[in-house]
Amino acid sequence: VESVLPSTNTALKKRISNSPHNLADGDAVLAEVQTAGRGRHGRSWLAPVGGSLTFSMYWSFPDGYQSMAGLSLLVGLAVCEGLRKVGIDDTQLKWPNDVYLQGRKLAGILIEVEGQIGATAHCVIGIGLNVTMPDGQYDVGQPYSDLAGYLGHVPDRNDVAAHIIEALWSMLPKFAQQGFGPFAAHWQATDLFADKRIVLQMGEKRFVGIDRGVDASGALLVETEDGISRFHGGEVSLRGH
Ligand code: ATP
Image (tube, rainbow, N blue to C red; front, side):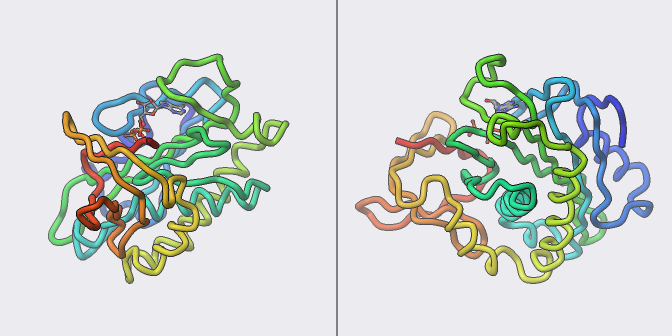
């Protein structure tokens, strides 16, 4: 646990590149305050002082990148599982990497790979979650929610972190062995846009269709009149339509 870090993902990535052999799967870096949190595509993650839970976990994948397909979805499920233990059972997931509460963004997930040594991919799982971030006080470019606003009291951040870390520890070994397939039905049951019209934005390109869940690799299945198309994470951003 550190008091102030620019980014827990960056700190953990440095540890991997300096001394990967000193890390074990499930090791985590937590910061009291994160000053320069990152999202995907170089976007920033806002974490007000004392109001946010920010941490990163290390995991290694001996079979390389391909065995990580669907990881951000699995991590979303683990966040929901951990939150269930503190009395929150109606979170939803937005493909591929966001956790929603009351229809607004509660947490973001950023998966990064710090190189591959031999066949093994060394992976950093970053989570930023709003604990006390009163509605209307911050501009993050989209609606957000926080645990305190939902629960009516400020939960213990350590308690929330411990439950999410435990859920990750219990789900990641199965994921590393069997992939995302065994979790796909559970993910679909938690999908914010299940059977709804959605827009996928890929750079300048837009794709409109109906969200029909995910396959065993975590790819999103989108139905149009031409049939079902599959989308993999990467450059895609998703909105309701
Ligand atoms: P999007 O959430 O827009 O579909 P994304 O999943 O690629 O895109 P992330 O990389 O997870 O986004 O997170 C970055 C985005 O999250 C920022 O562009 C900002 O709109 C939003 N954001 C930043 N900080 C917070 C926060 N504390 N709570 C909720 N949303 C935030």
